[in-house]
Amino acid sequence: MKISHPATSISPFKFLRCCECGQPLPESYEPPSDEDWTTGICGCFSDLESCATGFLCPCVLFGRNVETLRDDIPWANACVCHGMCIEGGLALAAATVLFHGIDPKTSFLICEGLFFAWWMCGIYTGLLRQSLQKKYHLKNAPCDPCLVHCCLHWCALCQEHREMKNHLSENASTAMTIVNPPPVQEMNPGENKEPVPSESASVKDESPSLGIQPL
Image (tube, rainbow, N blue to C red; front, side, top):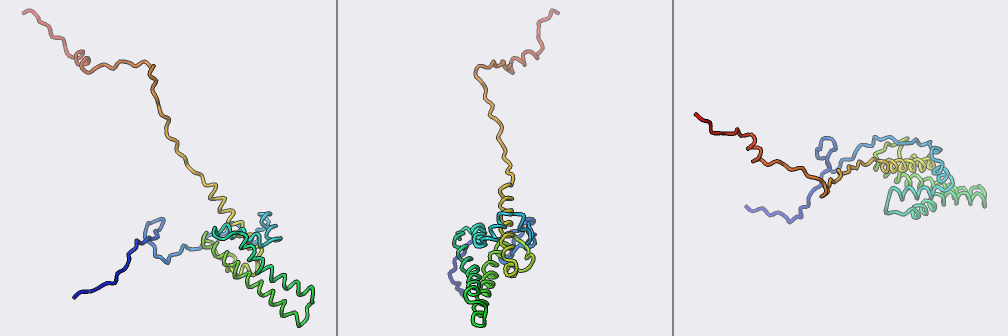
């Protein structure tokens, strides 16, 4: 009985291995997210530059965070997207209140703009925080990433900027051990060389002298 097998291309498998015991790990394995954040969610004043940028221009700080975390996305694209979605919704609600006031006719438009900004703030920027936590194995602190941005958006942006800044500084300050080879010793031709006694001469010196003695 002949069994036919379909032609399949076999590619070499790459297994993840444990750093401590060397055992292979399954493909679905993910390292536990148990690392603490280097700074707290309310530690904005520990870095005044990011604090000022996040308070005055949060879209710029968000663009810098995205560019640091993702090499394929320039900071300008993320900045414009943040400005259109979040700052745009807030500006729409503020302009409606300023020019038309708050009445039953405009209240729906105001609430729609605020809800859109709040929803995009939680979903769009929460995905970046989730990617950051996955990269550095960070905990969900103080709560879920999307919920953090919904409630403390500006503080979360500053915390993420400080976290990436601290990790980059730690990688740059890692000491590298450089072993220098020993210096090459060269012999000058003008140096006096002491003659090395030959083996035959030493054997002659050590052998006892034999002489003819009269009987």
